Image (cartoon, rainbow, N blue to C red; front, side, top):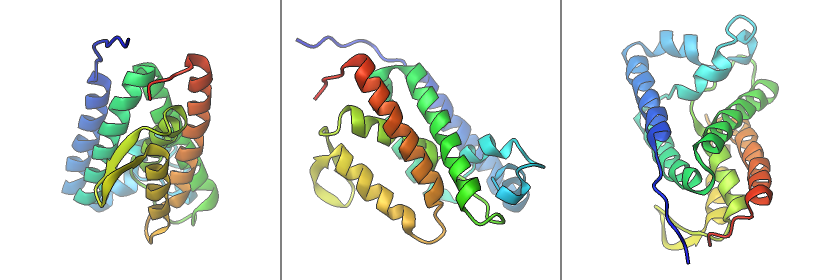
Amino acid sequence: MRTYRAVNLNVLWFLIALNVLVFIITSLRPEATIGLLGLTPALLSQQPWTIITSMFVHGGFGHILFNMISLYFLGSFLIRAAGDRSFLAIFFLGGLAGNILFVLLANPFSTGIGASGAVFALGGALAVMVPRVPVFVLFIPVPIPLWVAIIIFFLFSFLPRIAWQAHLGGLLLGLIAGLILRKRRRISYF
């Protein structure tokens, strides 16, 4: 017998609203705001806040749309599975890990933006916690295991103009977090 408890998604909705607000502000003056909030490794010592702010900046409508849809579905599932504190920790630590790998491995004069590292952290955690849960992916007509979907989306990281370093850093942090949560909670949802 399963018991269901009410889940408060306010923290998730707050993060989505913050991303949308920053996107609207950035859209008004893209060059100035991306230069101020985006993560450029060569400028990190002069703009240390960008290690965090870059997680909330997006470069176009498709970029923010895909990230926010992914954040909603993965985030709401992770909040239900592990709670909002674990969700927030994985989101921010995953984004930070992704940004650190971006600083270490990317062209020092490139600028990284987006919540993808943090979102991949959520996906990585869930892929370890509930790997076989079936999910639908837009372009695949049948449900596939979550871990397969995460791998498929990670492969898109190697397309041009995508910060694969941030995706990898977030994913690795998420996998580790998933192992910790699985051992701590002995989850058996699916």
